[in-house]
Amino acid sequence: SQTIHQWPATLVQPVGSPLSLECTVEGTSNPNLYWYRQAAGRGLQLLFYSVGIGQISSEVPQNLSASRPQDRQFILSSKKLLLSDSGFYLCASERNNEQFFGPGTRLTVL
Amino acid sequence: KNEVEQSPQNLTAQEGEFITINCSYSVGISALHWLQQHPGGGIVSLFMLSSGKKKHGRLIATINIQEKHSSLHITASHPRDSAVYICAAMFQGAQKLVFGQGTRLTINP
Image (cartoon, rainbow over all chains, first blue to last red; front, side):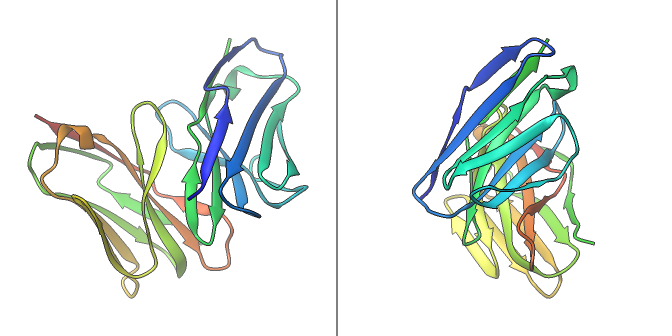
């Protein structure tokens, strides 16, 4: 069984500040990795996914970026946060059709 | 086009009632997932189905491949079952899930 670690759990950042959210996966190798965002009262929006090291697909053009420096590490970044970046960020892993979700990071941009 | 439709969007029931949430999808899938999201935000994968039926405790998930339809049932519902239930499909040849809109379930004591 896979375990996904995300940190931090909550984050309050000023507008214009940088962001780095990290996700690591245990219990599998070569998973597909995903970053989702959920705005308050809304559904999950896929931001990025990765099928391997260094391979990133972007779903929504925005001021966020993602990187996968290692097989089981997925990082979500921004150089300058916007108010609209506030939300709940979830990292997920998929391998052989099994889906696992991390605990999420609740980001508030003020 | 790969689409997933869930119904109902909101469901309120009394403790003990039998609950059914429905999910329809547009084309062939490799897997269909039922997820549960509690108010704190964390998501738990309940079931992954490609055919037939699965049961875990009071939860039952079924899928009819020919009709492109899946259902999630909860027997003897309890207030702690209150959550948002999400159907998500991995379509054949795709590498990402397509999510339904979610069903907000509230079980009153």
